[in-house]
Length: 335
Ligand code: UDP
Ligand code: MG
Image (cartoon, rainbow, N blue to C red):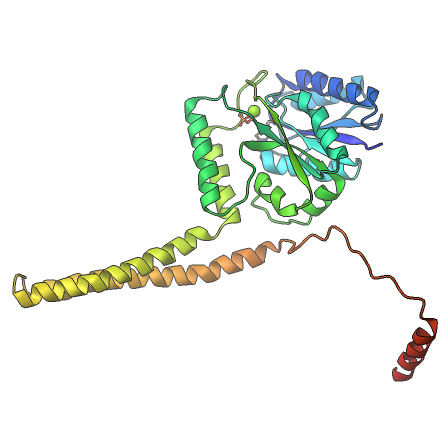
């Protein structure tokens, strides 16, 4: 049976930690009873340099439930995406399948069973997807929607309305560990891994307790990181605008010449206006062109895996002993 690890990043979560521990332990007990996961499955709390009593509470939970609760203490605050990565990479060596979930119980723990079922049905990644955003403010809803739209236009593959609540098989985490980049945007990276994937749908609830650790500033930073880490399209955009302006300068040339010959212009205007348009366009074009190279360097520097081989079917050897012997001898003779 597969051993499940539930990874929970925690930053100043003293108010919800006990609640989260209780809820997740409940889910584990239930799944163990139904024989869907191994009896030694566990929860791993990752303390992301909290300034409150979060780590003490994790230690207390571990003391009370040593076989169910484990903890990872990061030396300082590194942010949600890094904390989660630390947890995933630590947990993968101790388990067969991992699920990541926030500490605040906004994601529905009751769909974990469905995730595990879909894993058993042969999926390597199962995304938790919110059905609707009833509990979010209008502002958060519209900005989030705009974000997914822009990501799509920029050519970044993401799962719509999926945050970081997901199941990953050991081999999926193994593949993920080959991505060495530092600008992490996990939900953009997962679709690059490949394998069979599926989704489960749930209603996102209000935070169980405490406050959001993602103020607008952090949200915008994450959004910008998501685009800039996955797309060099903004650079192509500069190139495009440069070309457009050069084209416009050609039109301006015609217009300026006509005006010049019909005699409606102040002396010096023609040469001035043409220079402005043409040089502006030329500069943008040049910047865009240089940018194309920088974009390529950027992609090279990431050193992402270029492919992920899922399976190889090797051609079987034929029983043509005679032939092979002859070949072996030949090879020996060549050395
Ligand atoms: N978190 C973290 N480090 C941080 C900020 C947040 O580990 O620097 C964790 C936090 O404890 C929670 C998860 O990331 O488990 C998501 O944060 P939050 O629920 O505050 O974000 P929101 O749901 O409001 O977007
Ligand atoms: Mg939350």
